[in-house]
Length: 405
Image (cartoon, rainbow, N blue to C red; front, side, top):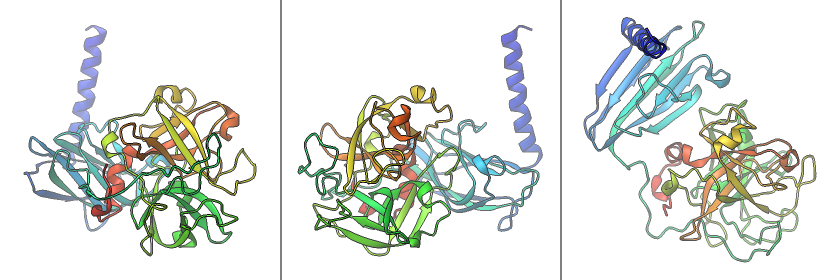
């Protein structure tokens, strides 16, 4: 037997062992989901918790011209670092082996859509698991239905043109989609954010991870925090926040959170939402320029500026970034421009891409982490917005408030 034949035999044996294990424990399910219909599945022993040492798989097939959309409003999976113990896996490509699947653990929700006709879900629990629960629904939706319906008269992503030419300080209300997450205990902007709807702001998950969101407020229309030079400045109390259920503090994967305000924000020329990159889903932006904005420190350990600052950065490829950060995932985007960077307290601020056709600003990234700002001469790692669009839509209802350009 030559080496190639032996490798093929070994692979087939491994696949058979996985499938045999699933079929032997009676936890391998397959279903066809008719057009416009839904199928519901839940963990073994639901509504009670599943047991330890569980391996289950659910495979759903939707008709030609349809995708499978999975909705799990509430999952309760014991959290572990990197979801190394119990985990729920979702393969949007329908891979039966769940390679490169989205991985979830901890409390949260799942809203994803398959890339083709098939979607595969897996549950793995450790031998020492205390168990968890989930109940999900898979719906057959027409291909392309994941994008919310456009509002023909909506406005988003406008850049006001009163900016300071050649400077690093932004013009007053140059970026009307910018928001700040204010720590009420010290009355300081802790993180940046981008306005999504009149009730929602997107920020970094690590800004609110294991925090009481009501201890913070959202400020919009702000420019210089010391002199009140913007007539549009308003502060809004927060009713709650959701951190992405797959956020991992060690790797900063899925580093995102959505804040909901108690009251609707007042929109106008000086305060408005950012455009979300639905039409750029397949663009990795490598080689593109983006603009980062924030009230973060000017250098590591340095003072914070009073006014909102901006910097243009270059997006680099995943391969280049992994030379420095090997663990960078497809949910992340790296930027590197010598001598320029985001810095401390810029986290959660948007990376804005200017549509060359319309001039509108799209949030394609979000500041996450880096090494000692620009001084380290290494890339900065950001959350890739196109990778979390379905989650954003699912957690910022109603969709009718979205502006799709």
